Image (cartoon, rainbow, N blue to C red):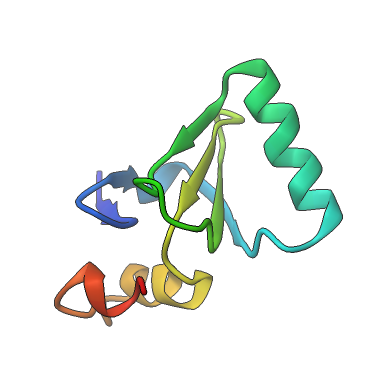
Length: 88
């Protein structure tokens, strides 16, 4: 099991991730709202703006304050040293 930091020390199991998407489109907004209504949203933003939505194979949806490119880069091992560089 490999854990991925999705912001502020919050970790996600990379083997269970299905997609990393931007929260701007209407279908993704509906996906997040439906998951919120069903109690399947994990909010890892610590009050910051949601910049990436991570869809898990268990139908849970993780909200991250990091850009989707940053999350994907961390999966490939190109991680930055701190979260504060990514979140403004």
